[in-house]
Length: 403
Image (cartoon, rainbow, N blue to C red; front, side, top):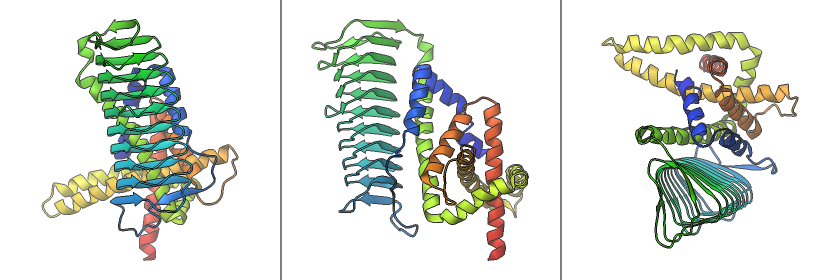
């Protein structure tokens, strides 16, 4: 099913990617990084403010208005305003041109950061460029990663990509995996690298020990200040397309997780009452929704295919399949919200009748972690997806009957 592919179907790839980036350490760091979304400020700002906005494709945030925890999504997103708390951005392209006092989360085809981030930054995209100081840790995933001389990382650097160019300064340790890596900056702590090709430029300075696993020995240019490299040669067959595939899917998962959070937040913002009702019905009519969801997930694609092979029903079959994919994706979001609300109840957390961004984060992160468990976790997530899909179909039917 489409929904299973979005989250649970790539679980083995996620595991491989995390193991490639040094096993338990990165897994715990990745989960902690994603869970460490702002909880200190009660206010959360959304942009665009209204669902009728005609500028969803091009979102530009600027002006005198003070934002705290800002959540913004669109086709092309530019934030040219200082953020007092945390910034959460997703889009085809994301350009951060304003100061962020606390954490930054950004995912997109192209991500550019040109202004300082006070604490941690987590970035994922096809091309990611950082040209500003980062007060805490910096986590990057993407095809091409560029860190200029202006980058000053106050904590640790974790990066995975196809081509990585680094020319800044890292106060802590660095863990880097990629195809081609070029280091021409300063790293104070220990360095762990896995790559096909590694080069140190003339301005490179590494104070800590270097552990390098790769196909070729490192190239060290004249003037570089690096110590002894603990080099472990790996087989050439492990490189190339397979590694690039791992990197791409790892970045895809990271970006997909961020996008799902943003979509869920926008649904709550613009359709909060309706979505809350659907989530509530997920638990109130558990078995009924499960049955409807499973039937819908199985029967709808079959009906679509049957229609498409007929002359008169081909167009209707295509439309039905497109609608099916759309509603399955929305059903996935409903399922994540259902998981979040269920956990809130199990932990006896205080919550309003309305869904909040805390419910979103708890549900999506819990679903991602459950989806990493082979077989049992995949089955559990399929059940949740079926319930969410069934509840959404029931709500859709009620809306059509009312109209």
